[in-house]
Length: 360
Ligand SMILES: Cc1ncc(COP(=O)(O)O)c(C=O)c1O
Image (cartoon, rainbow, N blue to C red):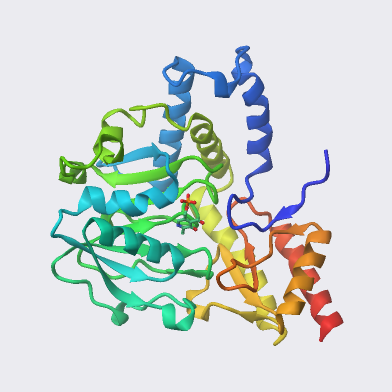
């Protein structure tokens, strides 16, 4: 097997080696039962145990209260952009949105197809280099919720605190779920695609307050109702079995590695090493304003686009993979999710120092 490279990709992203090794074994022969994991009927008692473990793992790690349902859905986080307003807004109702980047914009577009989105703040004019402060926006009195993207994967910005709102919060946590604790008392619903911090692509985690399930209108198709999936423990139809199994394994790994609090500490340390490097020389320039900096996706530029191309190329050659920034902003991006090892960050910083010296 070739040596493992450092994968700075924004997602699908790095998973724990232990999880990959266990999954590789179980795909062929699950629990030594003579049947592969991905051949198991989702109604079998073996798979029911896999589901129960994933559900319990998420509930325990995130301390999800009893009045919230945990759902494992398909369609990616992008389907949630529409499912949220479909399930929570009546035709003449509205949600308030904070436009902090591409993923927020896509959610706003869907909300406007289904009902109405009021954009209370937009950071677009400054290339989405920050998230708003509480004093920068007002949540409309007649809106049902405040929607925000907790971590903006493309621009490398992150809400450090929950945004202020007297309405319930809804959040797309696709790129920072399980990296810190969540105060569910403020939330109606959160969702996250698994493929960054929780597992492979193919499953989207939705955690929704139970009393909201009955809001859905009769006109919403069955598969697009949270209520449908909540009533059947995510088994209304064939669920994304393999991805759910992996989420369960990742939860176990997280628990053995300090849980969400332990991750938050490690993530802060890893990000500080990288941001300190960026701040130590004018050769690198961080994209995000300092108080909005993401602990998950570190975005930065070099003096010229040509140097960025060379930096990414040389990085790849040294086993530092996936450093290219998103096509909408260019530059470089190092995604350092929960399972990304600190040594990879140290190696990147060493390379950055060498590269700056050689090209200044
Ligand atoms: C914050 C955020 N939301 C939503 C998405 C879209 O997720 P999916 O590809 O699962 O639809 C992404 C993808 O990178 C993301 O980073």
